[in-house]
Length: 115
Ligand code: HEC
Image 1 (cartoon, rainbow, N blue to C red):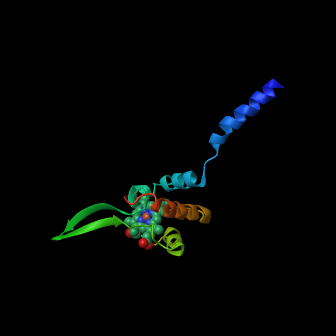
Image 2 (cartoon, rainbow, N blue to C red):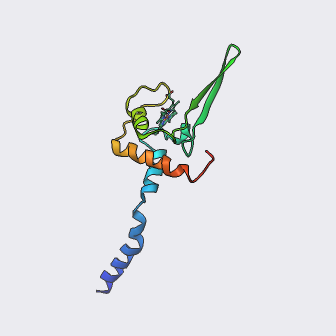
Image 3 (tube, rainbow, N blue to C red):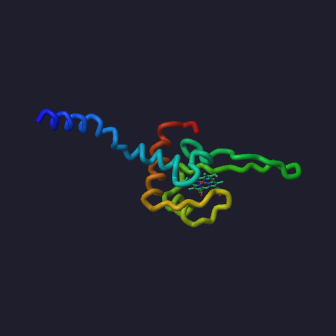
Protein backbone atom coordinates (compact mmCIF):
# COMPACT_ATOMS: atom_id res chain seq x y z
CA UNK A 1 0.00 0.00 0.00
CA UNK A 2 2.86 2.34 0.87
CA UNK A 3 4.38 1.79 -2.58
CA UNK A 4 1.16 2.81 -4.28
CA UNK A 5 1.11 5.92 -2.17
CA UNK A 6 4.66 6.67 -3.18
CA UNK A 7 3.94 6.20 -6.87
CA UNK A 8 0.92 8.40 -6.53
CA UNK A 9 3.05 11.10 -4.92
CA UNK A 10 5.74 10.87 -7.61
CA UNK A 11 3.16 11.18 -10.36
CA UNK A 12 1.61 14.10 -8.58
CA UNK A 13 4.89 15.96 -8.19
CA UNK A 14 6.63 15.16 -11.46
CA UNK A 15 3.58 14.65 -13.60
CA UNK A 16 2.84 18.31 -13.54
CA UNK A 17 6.05 19.12 -15.45
CA UNK A 18 4.89 17.21 -18.48
CA UNK A 19 2.05 19.62 -19.08
CA UNK A 20 2.92 22.63 -21.12
CA UNK A 21 0.79 25.71 -21.15
CA UNK A 22 -0.77 27.14 -24.27
CA UNK A 23 1.80 29.96 -24.11
CA UNK A 24 4.71 27.51 -23.98
CA UNK A 25 3.35 25.49 -26.86
CA UNK A 26 2.76 28.61 -28.94
CA UNK A 27 6.29 29.88 -28.29
CA UNK A 28 7.73 26.48 -29.19
CA UNK A 29 5.84 26.40 -32.46
CA UNK A 30 6.97 29.91 -33.36
CA UNK A 31 10.58 28.81 -32.89
CA UNK A 32 10.22 25.43 -34.53
CA UNK A 33 7.35 25.30 -37.04
CA UNK A 34 8.72 22.18 -38.87
CA UNK A 35 11.11 24.38 -40.77
CA UNK A 36 13.15 27.46 -40.05
CA UNK A 37 11.85 29.31 -36.99
CA UNK A 38 9.73 32.41 -37.59
CA UNK A 39 11.85 34.35 -35.08
CA UNK A 40 14.92 34.06 -37.32
CA UNK A 41 13.40 36.52 -39.76
CA UNK A 42 10.49 38.24 -38.01
CA UNK A 43 12.29 38.60 -34.68
CA UNK A 44 11.53 37.20 -31.24
CA UNK A 45 8.22 39.05 -30.95
CA UNK A 46 7.30 39.30 -34.62
CA UNK A 47 8.09 42.98 -34.92
CA UNK A 48 10.05 42.41 -38.12
CA UNK A 49 13.72 42.51 -38.87
CA UNK A 50 16.13 43.68 -41.54
CA UNK A 51 17.59 40.59 -43.15
CA UNK A 52 20.10 42.28 -45.40
CA UNK A 53 20.94 45.20 -47.63
CA UNK A 54 22.59 45.51 -50.97
CA UNK A 55 23.47 48.27 -53.36
CA UNK A 56 21.95 48.56 -56.77
CA UNK A 57 23.67 51.41 -58.53
CA UNK A 58 23.42 54.17 -55.99
CA UNK A 59 20.27 52.82 -54.33
CA UNK A 60 20.36 50.69 -51.22
CA UNK A 61 17.88 47.84 -51.30
CA UNK A 62 16.75 46.62 -47.92
CA UNK A 63 15.48 43.09 -47.53
CA UNK A 64 13.11 43.00 -44.63
CA UNK A 65 10.79 40.58 -42.90
CA UNK A 66 7.72 42.64 -42.00
CA UNK A 67 6.09 43.22 -38.66
CA UNK A 68 3.51 40.45 -38.29
CA UNK A 69 1.94 41.46 -34.98
CA UNK A 70 -0.70 43.81 -36.33
CA UNK A 71 -2.25 41.77 -39.13
CA UNK A 72 -5.82 40.55 -39.11
CA UNK A 73 -6.14 36.79 -38.74
CA UNK A 74 -7.38 36.59 -42.33
CA UNK A 75 -4.24 38.26 -43.69
CA UNK A 76 -2.02 36.21 -41.42
CA UNK A 77 -3.67 32.98 -42.51
CA UNK A 78 -3.54 33.84 -46.19
CA UNK A 79 0.15 34.74 -46.03
CA UNK A 80 0.93 31.32 -44.62
CA UNK A 81 -1.25 29.30 -46.94
CA UNK A 82 -1.30 31.06 -50.30
CA UNK A 83 2.36 30.34 -51.10
CA UNK A 84 2.56 33.69 -52.86
CA UNK A 85 5.44 35.22 -50.92
CA UNK A 86 8.78 35.57 -52.62
CA UNK A 87 11.32 35.32 -49.82
CA UNK A 88 9.58 33.52 -47.04
CA UNK A 89 9.88 29.73 -47.04
CA UNK A 90 6.74 27.68 -47.55
CA UNK A 91 5.28 26.04 -44.47
CA UNK A 92 2.85 23.20 -44.05
CA UNK A 93 0.92 24.31 -41.01
CA UNK A 94 -2.53 23.23 -39.94
CA UNK A 95 -5.23 25.82 -39.29
CA UNK A 96 -4.90 25.08 -35.58
CA UNK A 97 -1.15 25.74 -35.73
CA UNK A 98 -1.67 29.00 -37.58
CA UNK A 99 -4.17 30.03 -34.90
CA UNK A 100 -1.60 29.16 -32.23
CA UNK A 101 1.09 31.24 -33.93
CA UNK A 102 -1.32 34.13 -34.25
CA UNK A 103 -2.13 33.79 -30.57
CA UNK A 104 1.60 33.81 -29.72
CA UNK A 105 2.19 37.05 -31.59
CA UNK A 106 -0.85 38.73 -30.07
CA UNK A 107 0.01 37.68 -26.54
CA UNK A 108 3.76 38.35 -26.71
CA UNK A 109 3.24 41.76 -28.26
CA UNK A 110 2.10 43.27 -25.02
CA UNK A 111 4.95 41.72 -23.05
CA UNK A 112 7.73 43.61 -24.78
CA UNK A 113 7.99 46.69 -26.88
CA UNK A 114 11.38 45.74 -28.24
CA UNK A 115 12.07 43.05 -30.84
C1 HEC B 1 13.61 33.28 -44.17
C2 HEC B 1 12.93 34.36 -43.48
C3 HEC B 1 11.50 34.15 -42.99
C4 HEC B 1 11.02 33.17 -42.15
C5 HEC B 1 11.80 32.04 -41.52
C6 HEC B 1 9.61 33.44 -41.97
N1 HEC B 1 9.24 34.54 -42.68
FE1 HEC B 1 7.38 35.37 -42.77
N2 HEC B 1 8.03 36.67 -44.17
C7 HEC B 1 9.35 36.85 -44.58
C8 HEC B 1 9.41 37.88 -45.61
C9 HEC B 1 10.67 38.39 -46.29
C10 HEC B 1 8.07 38.32 -45.81
C11 HEC B 1 7.57 39.37 -46.82
C12 HEC B 1 6.98 38.67 -48.02
C13 HEC B 1 8.06 38.02 -48.86
O1 HEC B 1 8.80 38.73 -49.50
O2 HEC B 1 8.18 36.78 -48.83
C14 HEC B 1 7.24 37.54 -44.89
C15 HEC B 1 5.87 37.68 -44.77
C16 HEC B 1 5.11 37.10 -43.76
C17 HEC B 1 3.71 37.39 -43.52
C18 HEC B 1 2.84 38.36 -44.32
C19 HEC B 1 3.04 39.76 -43.76
C20 HEC B 1 2.14 40.78 -44.41
O3 HEC B 1 2.25 41.94 -44.03
O4 HEC B 1 1.33 40.42 -45.27
C21 HEC B 1 3.33 36.63 -42.45
C22 HEC B 1 1.95 36.57 -41.81
C23 HEC B 1 4.48 35.86 -42.04
N3 HEC B 1 5.54 36.18 -42.84
C24 HEC B 1 4.49 34.97 -40.97
C25 HEC B 1 5.53 34.08 -40.71
C26 HEC B 1 5.44 32.99 -39.77
C27 HEC B 1 4.27 32.70 -38.85
C28 HEC B 1 6.62 32.32 -39.86
C29 HEC B 1 7.00 31.02 -39.17
C30 HEC B 1 6.09 29.90 -39.41
C31 HEC B 1 7.46 33.02 -40.83
N4 HEC B 1 6.75 34.08 -41.33
C32 HEC B 1 8.76 32.67 -41.16
C33 HEC B 1 10.43 36.14 -44.11
C34 HEC B 1 10.37 35.01 -43.31
